[in-house]
Length: 387
Ligand code: HEC
Ligand code: HEC
Image 1 (tube, rainbow, N blue to C red):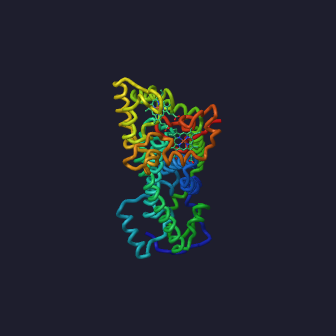
Image 2: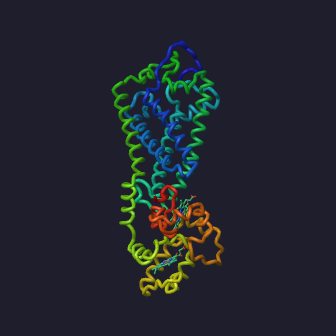
């Protein structure tokens, strides 16, 4: 290892970070900040998804670049075994760590950790989006509960990421001070101070392969274009319709029976909107159903009761079912979703005229404004009040 802090000819510079690596670094800063900020509001979900895609694009690039890229950017040039990391960490604690041109052994593992955590965040994000919000190409494959589970991991990994980023910035600042070299500037210009202690090995790593750089820049742009394309497509009615179709074709026969029997006079309300006791009471008095006769033969009644029991508010937990029931006392048996406090609070700002529109007709027509109401999703991203 080299001597600490030895300053050679301070006017001489050495290229350490090639431009694809620098571009990756600063785009990642931008895009992760965007993802973080857009997570503050639920209505920014689609922007959040966009940033998530951009992160995936950048990760793919960086992983490929880590194999075929220029010297200092290659994983095998900087990721070292535990022995070296340990030695370096000890030197560092005693403030004797040498200056390293590329990533130092600890920083190398920070890079790996950052990449892995980001990968985990984007993957769990995609599963959350599919399971919970029913958006995106994975929509058909994940259930609500899988989506919710993925979301909890997504959130914890995000905290882990914030801690790692804080550590990373702290370390960069500490190194900058102790080696009297602005590392942040180096990540912008690509150059570091060339000193006598830089051995020949290091010099061999200096990026020089123009062809690779150009090839990869094309790759970055293509990845970006692709991710933008995908996330814009999520919003298109065609994609939405295709996803709904996919979901519908998976709908169980019990669901179809329910929708045809209980969705004939009004919209088929999702079972999760009422608790078990409400459905039991309603199913046992169908001949007097809100002043109508909704009688069904005992066999169908039994089948629908089973379906309701499997998907009621106690079993199919969603944000909506939780919020609807949270204020209802145990001994009360609510019969109308539309009279529950949460429902009212969410719809009181919508004018009567809106509900009277031909495209809506009634507040009971949940599906007019909630694209996936039939499947129990009332997420903000899917609300669209029709003209
Ligand atoms: C013959 C027509 C008809 C059939 C069939 C029918 N309903 Fe209804 N349902 C009504 C009417 C009418 C109302 C009251 C609507 C209103 O207040 O405007 C109602 C209201 C409801 C409500 C309360 C909605 C609210 O205000 O929150 C629920 C829940 C409900 N029905 C469930 C069912 C279920 C479950 C089935 C199938 C077993 C079913 N309905 C079948 C006519 C019907
Ligand atoms: C005219 C359009 C319209 C109709 C019809 C409608 N809603 Fe809504 N609903 C909205 C809007 C808009 C919001 C968002 C309100 C807000 O966030 O302030 C909303 C919010 C909700 C929420 C809360 C979503 C959340 O973020 O947790 C639930 C649950 C809900 N609606 C259920 C229903 C059900 C059930 C029906 C049918 C009985 C229904 N809605 C009918 C427009 C409608």
